[in-house]
Length: 122
Image (cartoon, rainbow, N blue to C red; front, side, top):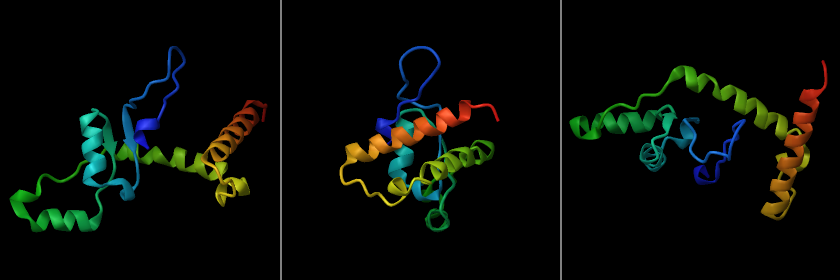
């Protein structure tokens, strides 16, 4: 999933490497963290309790504790609210579209509608 991300900037072509990734505990696997380190992307992902317990159980062989930027993690709320707004469309929330192409088209259409609504004066 991270390989397909494109970040829009005001000038130039879309970037493929974000500065940081803020994700919830479900994405705290070693593979995800290793991928982010390899691409020099800052990770704001808290550690799961069972992963921390396993690391501590291994003692000095368990490695260092995971650190993450708490302020960056709090900004994740903006993305979560956006996803909730996208899923207000029933077809997107329940995945009625049978092909990935039509689902992505629905995501783009919903994103356009939300963007156009944001342009209207309040």
